[in-house]
Image 1 (cartoon, rainbow, N blue to C red):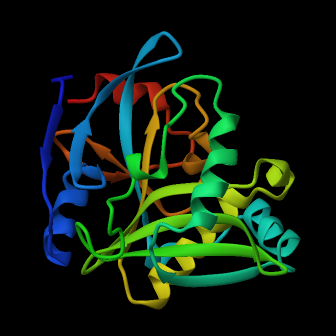
Image 2 (cartoon, rainbow, N blue to C red):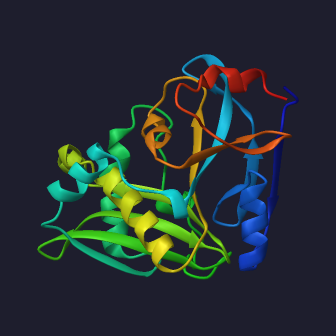
Length: 227
């Protein structure tokens, strides 16, 4: 597999430009855009798989429906992404979950003006009695939506709030007429991102060959030698 490792900076991208970048395997944190197809994870060199969902074909699985039912008591709000004292405080608690590669700040992932730089971004908030318990950030392109970052209250881990915000992002993307939902990357070895591999109507970028549906019984290690 030919290695891919590229990056650039952009203060603004149009919705159509964002669609094209996502389709080519690019992601971004703030104004820093990047793509790569090989990573070192858990001491193992592995393949990196950009993932997206065909929204017209998506229906939640039985376990995902359970997550929705378990959290029916929570309030959902969607609005322009913003840095607030509330989101900073939640991030400070959320980051303590990581034993290594602990992020420093939410600003590692979002620009100073995340609602409009480098493009439109909304926040999907989850609240209990008005108190923020989880939030994720969703980029909106012309035909695509892309999950940027998600965080949740550590003591609410049993609620699967990360899965909940992902499902609500998908719901919102469908409601506003998008074709694809980009779920970020997963690896060809087991990782904390494996929950993304269980999304229905899923496709992975076969580097150099385009997007391919993932059939039942797909062997993730096969992607390591693709191309």
